[in-house]
Image 1 (tube, each protein chain N blue to C red):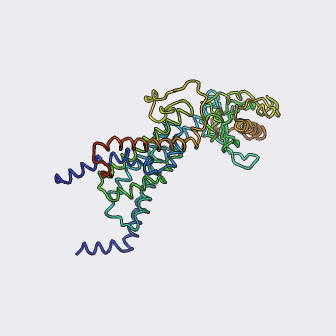
Image 2 (tube, chains in turn yellow, brown):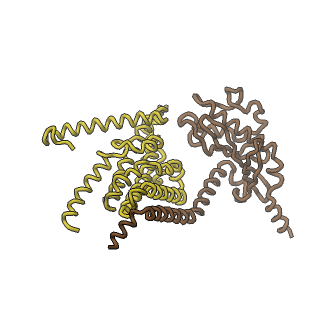
Image 3 (cartoon, chains in turn cyan, yellow):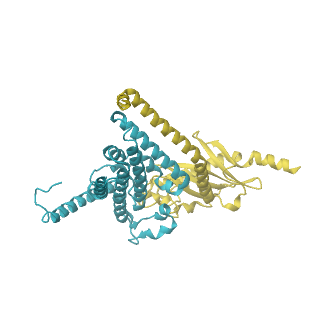
Length: 234
Length: 220
């Protein structure tokens, strides 16, 4: 590898990571995958499980799509990607059911939903089909982790407001050693039901989206006096 | 030269068909292999789940058999088949368990009901439901011990018309803010008891035919 391509690749790694985790976040910026986002985030634990399963599928699908990107012609790319993703999700589903049954019982319903998570097809289409395997793997991982972070925050907020607990059932997902994560933040809390029900998901997501806008604006305002004003956009 | 031929071929419809065909063939192969590999572990896990829920409604000292091995399928009044799990002790049926369903606030509630041969409830546990978290989910034993109140009761105790929630003039508590859910569970359990009363002979007397046969052969 020449030093030039290495340098190029070096620049990419940082941007891919920042894009995936924050500036082009699946949920907060692309507004993709809202169905699983709202459906599973009743608790932080469910959000974490769904996020990790999605991250695994997204990373593997990105790698596969990238590996065959020179074989696939534009005309048939969508069916090829969909078959690949659906197969992967089914394999994950079968594997979890057989070898991580407790986790499968918690996530079971939502694993099949990963197939229709448009973020996965979206990354295959807009990134993996145009980039080398390594970069695609990182993109999948970072996009997945960004998605996971949003699901955990959303689930955590809804869980705290709705039931006064945090990470309830975490030992079921992560093993008995992680039982310390299960917190009861507000003792004798009667619960605030709407936060756990679907409307609470929309409300919390709305506040999160607004929060990201505000933070982006703040960061831009802080950055402005340092760089060239007005003209430096991008 | 060969690159040119390759490019021409790649643009043709034949290549696209081949590509799709290969992808699907590969996917199908992978799925068949994965299905083969995981079928047995998955069946095992499901059996473990079933055993775990049966163990909650049939005390272990009441049987020396594999509950999943001695089953019987009967049809209930509505014509749906019900699998009866029978607990045997020395070849004698000591208890039975089967699943009953109630129509809750947000879909079906599945309850596993364990009964002694005299018709007394050994235990009842909710297996699945879609009730509102925080309101209707108190029927789960993990959330509330409401469901434990049924243990030891039978069709005549309390009397038939008192097998209902208090709001309907019965004996059982409803939850504040949720009446439909406990009503559905109570009705399902009452239905289960009536089903047992109607099919008691078939469920208990016949024991397990194979177990009876085994006893006969070992007598010699």
